[in-house]
Amino acid sequence: MDQLKIGRFIAECRKKKNLTQSQLAEKLYITDKAISKWERGLAMPDSSIMLELCDILSISVNELLNGEIISMEKNEQKNERILLEMAKELEKKNKTIWVAMWAIMIVSITALIAGLFIAAFLIPEGVWQIVAVIGISVVFLIPCFYALKLEVSVGAYKCKSCGNEIVPTYNQALYAMHLGTTRYLKCPKCGKRTWCKKVINKE
Figure (cartoon, helix red, strand yellow):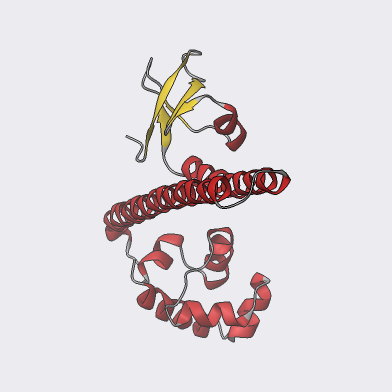
């Protein structure tokens, strides 16, 4: 999607309605700075207010995302193009999150090993050594929980039995037995518990 084009289109539609940025912002319960960012192509309207924005400007969501008024005969073709672009953007974001998750895990494990080495060989045996080991382990767990949250937010887990794609809650993923990104989950479709493999993109 062309954010600059969409921004110019929002500005054009706003002016046709004789609305200032402040007046439009007031109707949407946001700041005029947000409107300014949209119109300069620096940001996109949040999905939660997109319908209301379109209603105020008397345009369709399809027209908003294309940055132009669309005739009926071109509407279907434009819809297909938008859906394809959105799917590509989602795939790109998912891959970025996936890479970030693995980066967090690798850095955390490296830091854990280094910390335990320091605690074992550089801190004298006794209470302080035990405190150091506990502290290092707790600090290690924090990014692990965050990495799991990232993992759950991307893609789904494929049931080994029926092939259904499962999107578990954070707690379900946390308490499930796992090997890497493969988790022992119950499939809501076939009702069986299997080792479900993580897949980034749904088929």
